Length: 357
Ligand SMILES: [Zn+2]
Image: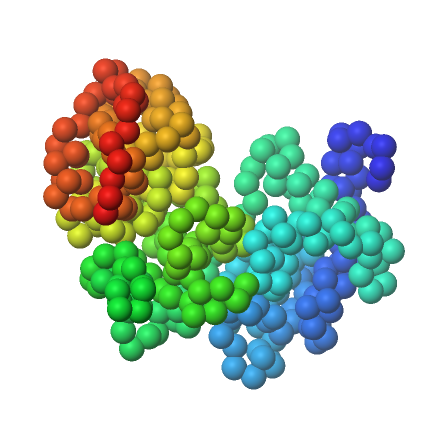
């Protein structure tokens, strides 16, 4: 492949013969320990489901999973989980898709496949980020995937009021809110760490989750996303907001923390707001922005304000606190929301007020 231009690569990838696609998919399945594979006339490989969160009894002995080697999509009829091939690889390996991508790139071949697996990646890119600039399919999960993380006799004190005598600081989320969003707790997540699981539902379907490390502070891997997490295509809690003005914050944690008294908060999963998210938010007659008080947050405020002011009334919360909404108490949040100003006259604070929670 080396030395060939992009166009040639896409051309080759798209025209990878079906027999080779099938062999690559068979080799991938055997890499994940799947041995019983049947091919159908509809170009699918039927096999036992290897997903680590499928909840299959007896290892799905009567095969209910199917890998379409033409469309490169996976679907399991028994556990109800489905997604693209890269999602499938990441899910089987308990990783995020960026790691699955690195793994694929590092392989020089699997089983009988002489061809580099890199070719498979090129093919996925050509199918999903090629000239049509489409996203790969959004994964869909059965909500029962959340059971191991939500079926606790009671909520972990980290989510609610904490256990100060054990040094556990609580996030102060009411139990009713935890139930509503099906927030869970993983004593041992796939990477062995202790994490809070924040599910992402989009128009009624579970499309992924964020696993947030229980410790406060900023560090690498604070958040781990489910594979192929559709960050750019969804807005946390937005579909359930009726009425004029969602209050848009950066992080689902802020929504969880304040949903009890401000149910119209929605979160963009970070300060980079995608075009798709802009369009989703544009459907409301008004919008109120409350991104974090840092350069990234102010840039996001300007980006959304400029892009959406032509379509809707955009407001901004004039907070001067060096704290995210998740760290501020209810009454302060309520009064800051009442002080919202039109985007046209908003300026970032010149000085930040320290906040001690
Ligand atoms: Zn399954």
